[in-house]
Amino acid sequence: MKIKFFFKISTLFWILLASFSFGISLASSNQLVAVINANSPSNAATGFSLLKLHTSEQFNLLPPALAIYESTLQDFDIYLVKAPTQKTGGYIFISSETSNGLRICLQSPSPLTPVTMALSNPIALIKITRGSKVASEVRLCE
Image (cartoon, rainbow, N blue to C red; front, side, top):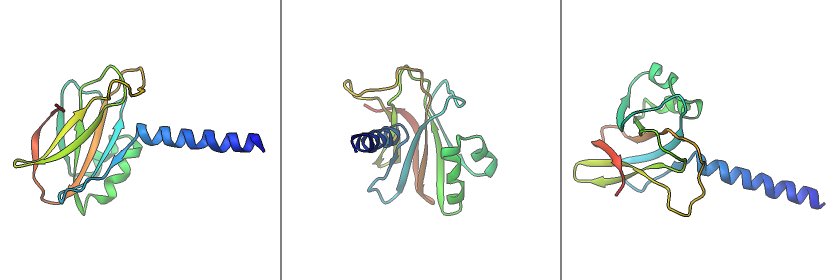
């Protein structure tokens, strides 16, 4: 009985841990539908970039966990956001509404947050209402 209980608790722990490393953030904005954060070892970037995705070929270059959002391309505008390589994990993209449109920034982990001690390449898909305005600059959050 104790073994089954321990197995259930450890399974729940790993599910919660996985949900923190690949997160989906839903916002209350009228424009923003979701920010889907991930890490991509193969998509290293030297600077911040924001690219509107238009074709299936662009989705084929993404990690499988992000490529599945290709099916929503007809209904939403989808942007790929990349950040420069970071020294640890725990970085996520967040959004806020400004007068210039939706602003995207990379938030660093708080000092007491446990993070992966390895280089990371934060990327995210920003899924917004079709025709919404997005500020062209992506940077570290203040």
